[in-house]
Amino acid sequence: MGIPFSEIDITNRHLCQGDLVERIAVLAKRSPKYIILREKDLCEDEYLSLAKHSITACAPSEVTCVLHTFVNVAKELNHPAIHLPMNVLRELSENERKWFKVLGASCHSVEEALEAQRLGCTYITAGHVFPTECKPGGPARGLQFLREICQTVSIPVYALGGITPENRTACLEAGAAGTAVMSSAMRSEV
Image 1: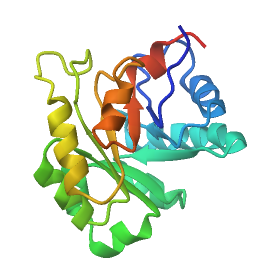
Image 2: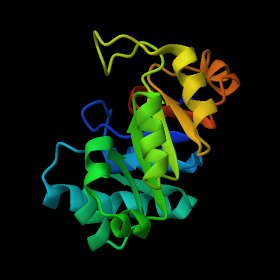
Image 3: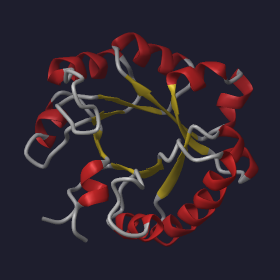
Image 4: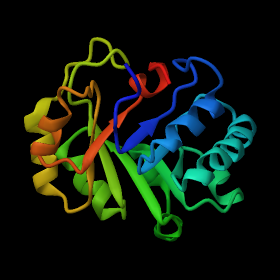
């Protein structure tokens, strides 16, 4: 099975089969809306180096590489696309948030989704919708959770967590603008 279609592909070098930057280039050729470079366990210098290569890998396909967590790296690279955990988003000043043209956040409740929208996010991920290996033991929030968030906010919502080609349509029917995947993007044959 090849890489499933999704609007957002999320990296995890620990799951990646082969070189991560090469995988990003392959994913970019499929033209997702975003590729989120979610290597938040790296030190800032390592992330900076990886971010430079990843942005370059996305450029030929005109796919937006969205940095993750490392606000200072994004500023240093003058790269206006970032995805943040809610605790990091809350720490940014209004001017810092406005600097980003693409500002995403990971939301796990309707309240967080509303807060992310109020803080200027241009999109959010909502999850985890279905059971996933990435969050073992954590209960899936389900389609009703996704539906409530989609009905509550006016920014695009991307369903995350346990997304498969078989359940993708149900996410769209619940109001999601699309889906986001990590494991299948990192592990699928290319």
